[in-house]
Image 1: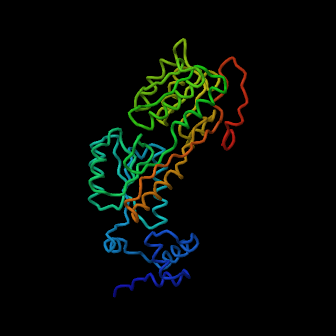
Image 2: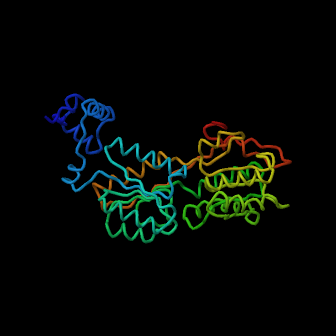
Image 3: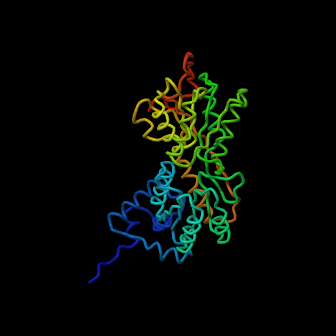
Length: 353
């Protein structure tokens, strides 16, 4: 004899909430208090209740499934964004299907078409450098979409990212305030709009300081090894920069390898400031100063905008730009031969973790 299935009414009774509240929890609707939502989920777990999301989705022409397209899950920023989005989805009884583009526009287009064939309710995408075919496909299907992190100057779809111009300007001003005048900004490619915006912020700060002619923008390539090989000759040159600002975690790793090959010490010979803050920046001394992207807040805004579009698909496209704080640690100091200046205003959350 088959075991009787637990009903949602039994879950509601055990949790001490109304049937409507329990239903709203499993349907992912807003307006349920956090305490009530937790009691419902705990009651469902205790009773072994599993809502039939597919059947409910078909009744509403919804599958309660979100597609998430990322270039590379090994990239720490993308990995953090994926984790935050999955946590939110779990809390609201959604499923997430994750696919990777591997920086290949054709693969990206193919994977998005596969997600659309699964009838996902919406898409969150961190696009490749040229995603015109993918963008056209998504417009054709009129599916709710949010572009995350790698946004464009004028996005058709809603978008969420940090204010890249302001973030790199903040970091550059920190280095200038320490007395550096010969700065290099290392970025993998300016074909991505957010990377180009980071370059823009760097050059704006150098221009404001009257040092535009001494600003160097290095584009060594997309990999750590290409970055190492491209930056090493610059560090070995007679007129080398006294500070390097890296525009991505890949660039940071490549520059650190180049510094080792050059036999240099940080910050005694060279100051280093990284864009993107991760745990490994504080594993070995010196701890690396960094611009921190608020990945949890970015994911939260992306989810909010996407799910709001389920109820109001014609709502105006929302574009969120968040501040990215500067975390000063041990790799940024005065250039060789100059006394270090105290810049307390630059420190956010302390000088070390």
